Image: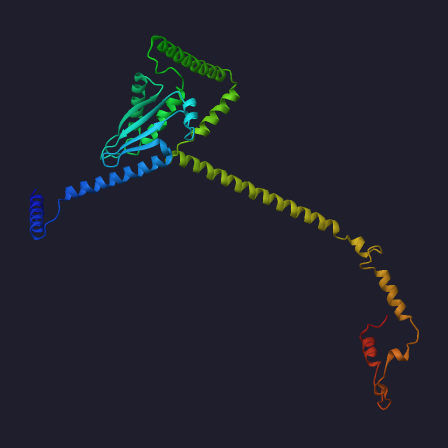
Length: 337
């Protein structure tokens, strides 16, 4: 409490000092002026958008605030052709909107209708109520275009002659048409329900799937966690299946390679047989014997130059004892008894 009192004193004296030292404009008035300028800018932008959309059907009845806008509405847009518009449209109105200063953020527009063609006062009351309900549904945002669209849809659904006839006969005809319209809607709903009841279980399930697909599934922390766990498990299963398939393929490939190697390997019989020609002892012995018995003279030209010093007779080879080794070997042998 003491702190609050001190704070109030500080603020009070600060405000007094600032007011005395340098006069400032009223902050509340400045804020109000700023908000008013902001609302005016938003309203002018909405007016420009309406003029761009409705072209000559839009009318600005007041250039100063509060603005008054009027929009001519008809069931069929004939592109400005007056004769065609008169023939195609049996009902027509003009929506008049008075725009408050703090629209659209705080206050709703004041709506009224001017009957141009084909409507009664009861129709006007119904349309004004419909327009106000649409404006309330769009509170806090520009609502005039949405109101115009709702009024135009109503005119398109009731584009018939005689709505402005207040006689008893005209009222009875209108009620009859309304009753027929409601009856047709009820019949359509009944046929739809009947068709739905006559569906098989598969068709019903397919319809429910389509409905859920159109509406979608609301994403929450719980649903996302459930989906993520399921997705992770599916990915792990796919990876495990791929690993198993690769291991199986590698095993098959290795087995096939071993079988092929075993089939290509030569047996001992094939190695030493004449058919294989790998290691044939008989052929080797025959070749060695042929070389040993070969007495064909060598061609001197093929022999080339011979070093005669290798065969010099100066060296006496008689001193060499070639039989000493043989004698020693004979002495080591045991005598025959």
